[in-house]
Image 1 (tube, rainbow, N blue to C red):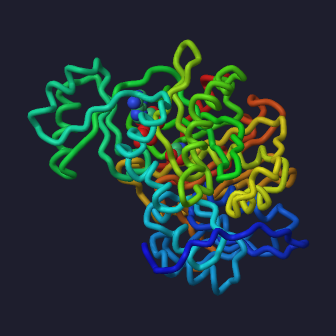
Image 2: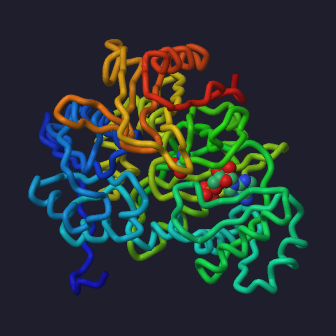
Length: 438
Ligand code: AMP
Ligand code: GLY
């Protein structure tokens, strides 16, 4: 939006003990994990969350503001005197929340709307990658029914059909049935006027969350999500049913290729733009049999549930890291990481991902949030309190049970033992999270 005001990037400053006030935007497991990381920082005095969930209400102050209400979020940040706003979901970034916060002079972790287009438009992301020579699959842009058959002939099955809309990872159809691919293409065409057919990339997926500003970039430990709802990666795509980090598929050799072929050209390009990209660039990778990485997708935010297994592995100050990115000073910071392993398992409502059933009571026998030793967390997502103290489900993904331990096997044991203590009628979770690494 052009406000007629010159864009002035906010400047880095040093905070004294408990001086900083932070606002986290969002209400999922990702935001609960970010909130817990931020409150552990000695510089942070207050963390506010909009809208938050039952979990964040125990450790921070929730505000009943929807993530889509940009004016209200900017107003809240100003009235609280926030030193930093950390934006969880992509929607408000695509809609210009970071732009508005910049105009208001509030440092924001999360890119401006143009940068957010890397997630907001799959076509824009593909074109950018093609221009920069970043390895990714080929694509057909289809804008008439007459193009469908020749496009399907051009790629061998399975076919990947994508609508160019934000769909939380659920707007993709991957199928070896030609009639199913045809219907998905014609349906997308009818709704949006165009649709994308993508070349299928085979291999193993990994997620790399990259902290990035114009001064530099730092990749956090690579993780692996489990996008399909069912055991053994079956059934429809979801927002993510569980994750672990570090992901052993990303060996040093693979990582070096990701850095040189994917992250460096993207950072060079982003930092040459007039407005700096400041936030997380989530690189969704497919690593083929020879260890060559390809980009499946970009997201312009932290992953969910990848954040739940990545943020706890950062041993340095999370606030300092996010604040340095938001103020373009990342190059003078060196985040450090523990050698631990983390696993998170998502508990989903009955009917998720199609028609999640909400409003049911949740019983958590092990305590609401964390074990005393800090090695196991219940990250809340779709949870809220009604009638005061009654904890109920309020979303498709309800909770994520996270274990952090010296080995992945132990992290897995911790995560599943937490899950054993949760009762939510009709709910389901995958019992095979981490199967590729274990
Ligand atoms: P996206 O909405 O682009 O995040 O895609 C969601 C999921 O669909 C990815 O995490 C992959 O599991 C799968 N997927 C998307 N695009 C492709 C592709 N070109 N080849 C193989 N799998 C894909
Ligand atoms: N876990 C996938 C995502 O955050 O997009």
